[in-house]
Length: 78
Image (cartoon, rainbow, N blue to C red; front, side):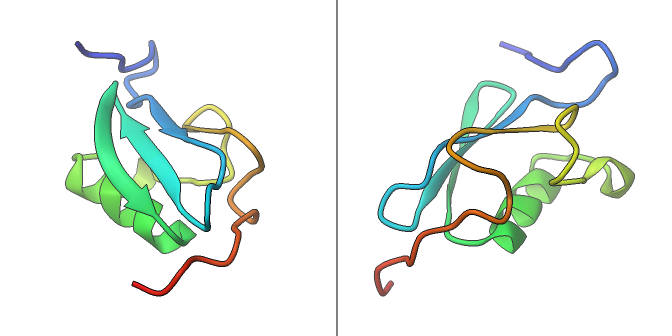
């Protein structure tokens, strides 16, 4: 299922933090779990999002639940 929006930008959803982790969904597919913003960026790159379309603070590009890109809880040790 392709959930790319009308502007050709993939649908990126970052769920609310849980134990320092945030689940990331790109175009309706589970992209993984991030513990910091850089990991969200890397997931977007791996999903093929062009570099000029990666903007974590742009609500047209990333939908944040439970706080924006500056809201992260302390993650447990890996």
